[in-house]
Amino acid sequence: MEVYESFNRDDTFDLGFSLAKAAVPREVISLNGDLGAGKTVFTKGFAAGLGIEEELDSPTFSILKSYYTGRLPLHHFDVYRIQSEEELDETGYEDCFYGEGVSLIEWGNLVSRILPLDAVIVNIERDYGKGDDYRRIEVSGPDKLIHEASRN
Ligand code: ADP
Ligand code: MG
Image 1 (cartoon, protein in one colour):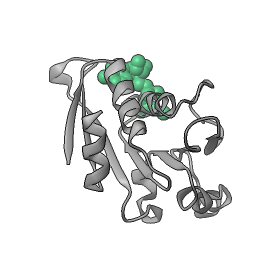
Image 2 (cartoon, protein in one colour):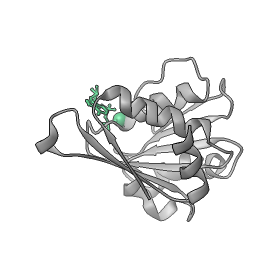
Image 3 (spheres, helix red, strand yellow):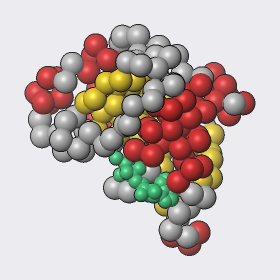
């Protein structure tokens, strides 16, 4: 496990950017953290790191949005409002997880049962003692990916 300290929005963006540089096909990343933790900021950095130039917005009204203009396809999920297993199945997540792209799942902890065993887990936590903009970001999962990301 690697622990990063983020002191502002850009630090979190940059961490996503670095992890994207090391990303490989079929990587699945679960982003865990409360509302406003920075999961979407991280995803924006990740998209930029893949060379995706389109604006990435929070998929609030859809569970999944895919982007195909970067080095690898990016499948961005937000499962916060998911109501049923059926709804999840309808997204076709299996084709995303086991295809050639990278999947990022905001609130992945809510659907941990369906995550591949080798998913990368990113936990973003506040520490109010350290100010509004501070985030402690834990990255755990296959060691190779994490070490490559931290070298970037
Ligand atoms: P989430 O997707 O986890 O609900 P967002 O990424 O949409 O959260 O929003 C995070 C908000 O917190 C943004 O408004 C961002 O500017 C702000 N922010 C402040 N400090 C940080 C930080 N260190 N990392 C990420 N976002 C931060
Ligand atoms: Mg979000």
